[in-house]
Structure formats: structure tokens, C-alpha cells
Length: 208
Ligand code: 0O2
Image 1 (cartoon, protein in one colour):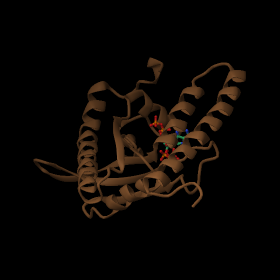
Image 2: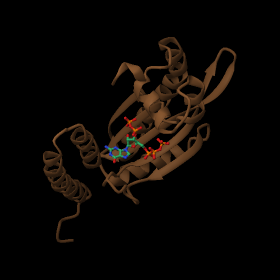
Image 3: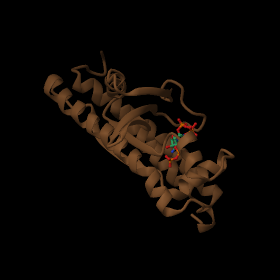
């Protein structure tokens, strides 16, 4: 990323992201508790792993520019809702919805927005379930809500998204097309394996 994009001073950026990191860690903890509790009750974990990230300064500035907004911390706080991001990788599609449903029941979270790209895949082929919650963060002088974007998807959906991201950075156009075709094929195979595993684990056979 080129340095000419960097308009927000480092100290201002650090000050901006601090409460977002607190909100993100709070949601991460909730998800870990849910996963353990689920295990106790149903004898399995719905979540395979959780990744967290705070949007980098350069990436934040790029997003502000793309949205034609001033490149300031104020504009970021008012308009960018994925400064704090959590990616939850589940085993199966039904786990994605089970986790999403359990989060909905946590009444101290404020629901902001939901996008179901599993039911309505993006034109690119991207599938995932996205939800944004306002998360309460308590400081010495009071409480404030900070948005956290949670992306919930299965391993095969994550494989597609991560590989497609890598392919986008390739320079040779001809190679890109070939890679994209392979990606569609491999991720379909993975999706089929995921479905078969789910059926086997639930005691069903292919003939049923
Ligand atoms: P990064 O690096 O993941 O942060 P918004 O502007 O965010 O309010 P948008 O962009 O319509 O609105 O939000 P959406 O589609 O709900 O979520 C955007 C995020 O989803 C992206 O974040 C990616 O993480 C992921 N995503 C969406 N479409 C694709 C896709 O086609 N391929 C891949 N690999 N990921 C996708 P950012 O901010 O673009 O990037």
C-alpha cells in the first residue's frame, strides 16, 4: 500500500481503534463461550475457528476514499462499520445459522445489519453470512456502542473466499481466468465433501 494514502496520523488511528478492539474481543469471548456451551449440550462444536482483525490504517483510508468521504477519524467512526471484524469458520451450513441465531438472542447487542450471501450469493460467487452488531463498551466515564462485523461461513466457503482474494492479486489476466475456473471446481468438490460428511455424521447414507 502506498504511503501517499496515509492521511490519518498514527496516534489518531490508534486512539480510534482502541474501543473497537475492546468490542471485538468482547464478541470473540461470547463466541468462545457459545462454542463450549454448545459442546456440553449437543456433544459437538459448531465453530472450527475464529479470526479477528482490526482494519489497517491504509485499508481504512482506501475505503473512505472509495466511499467519497473525508479521510478523517470522524468520518471513519461515523461511516465505516467493519473497523472491527470477526470471521467465524463453522463446520456445516446449519452451524452458521445456529451461531447467528444464538448471537441474535444476546439482548445487550444492538442489531445493525444482516446480509445473507449464502441464500443470495454475490455475483462474484462469494457466499457467507454477515451481521453487524453494536457492542457495549464500558469506560470509566460511561458506556458506548461500537460496531463489529461478524462474517460466519463454512470451511468450503472460506476456502473459496481466501483463494479468490489471492487470485485477485495475480497480475497475469490469462492465468487469473484459469485459476478462477479451478477454484470453482475445487470449492464445489469441497462443498460436496462437506455435505457428505454432514450426512455421515448425522447417520444418513448417500442412498437415503
Ligand atoms: P476486508 O479486507 O475483508 O476488510 P460496506 O462498504 O462494508 O458497508 P459491502 O462492501 O457491500 O458494504 O459489505 P459486505 O459485502 O457485506 O462485506 C464486505 C466484506 O465481505 C469484504 O470486506 C470481504 O471481507 C467480504 N467479501 C465481499 N465480497 C467478496 C468477494 O467477492 N470475494 C471475497 N474474497 N470477499 C468478499 P472488505 O472491506 O472488502 O475487505
